[in-house]
Image (cartoon, rainbow, N blue to C red):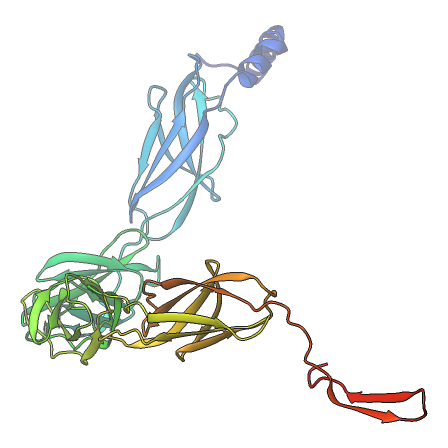
Amino acid sequence: MRFSRSGALGLLVALGLLLCAIPRSLVAQEVQAVPGPSDLQATAVSPSRINLKWTRVNTGLVVEYRIYRYPSNALIASVPASQDSYADTGLSPWTEYRYYVTGATSSGNESGPSNVATARTLDGTPPTAPGNLTGAASGSREITLTWTAASDPQSGVSGYVVYRNDAEVGQTTQLSYIDGSLQRDTQYSYKVTAVNSQGDEGAPAGPFQVRTPPPSPPGAPRDLSADALSPTEVALDWRPPQDDDDVEGYRVYRNGSPIATPSGSDYRDSGLAPFTVYEYRVTAFDDDDDESSPSNAASVRTLDATPPTEPGNLAGSAVSQTQISLSWAAATDPQTGVAEYVVYRGGSEIGRTSSLTFQDDGLTTDTQYSYGVSAVNGQGDEGSRAGPVQVRTLEDSTPDPPRDLTATTVSASAIDLSWRPPADE
């Protein structure tokens, strides 16, 4: 059918009138009512892929979702309304991408954008191998490894993995590692790899061969001391060897014979004879029972088990109204000897002396006192008391007579008398 120019114009006018007849509210309502997706999340899963996920709208208006890559606003995909995820692939490693999603109706109306979600693709290259791997035995059962840093210009190096004989034995963020609890005189092979912040492990450095040293006995214990605690017990103390890593225990020798194997650095030897000299030495041994040379020798005498005897022939006499003199025969102690004597008056100690006599002064006239005396040996042990012996101070006495009495006649009825006072007046 052909239309004239005037007929075509009339048709356009008619269509315009028809569109004007549709209420504006209905057209605006359809455009404004298109809801958009929400809670968009972006997760990098490889150097070339990012997974997107969002919350779909709860309406039948939306028939598809449109995925845009920001900031170019390039439409990269459209997916059905039943779908709430999308994998964006073919991306560049270690590159940041930003996304938003819209909903669209069958008529092509499009919602506003969702939130913008950002993700960086994973590092596409592992870190380099650590450099200059080396190692040495740092103990009989220990090897210390060192290396120089690996590099990863994208995500950086987060740590290192240490392998012994191709089995992982540890991880560290340092440039060294101590591998312990090894067998002595054994060769080990080590490798070290670097791991970046995304968990990618690089090529290994190594292998590097290291041998632990052969067995050798521990060093000798130091500064052994011995102290007598009683007539039957001695306390021993010593310092461990300077390098005690291999020390499993100690062996205590008394007068050349082993008597105990303590694990610590002290020991109490009991069941000994009183007042007897003993000599001690201590050695260290490892878990192979390799024994060190002996420590210094420490000698000690156990304490005296018996107190001194009782002093003999305790006697006393009053010297004056205020003083009493005591005397006794010597006590004996065949082990530590007698150091001094203790004098008691009325059960209370009043003095000590190393002689066999004692003067008690400042007493009361004509008063009886009771005395005892005991001996103390060289270790401070006190024996039994001699006594008691009773002694009374002297009574008051009459004065001495006057001296040199003279009489001189002075007249027929008078005589003068004169004399000297007593010697003790």
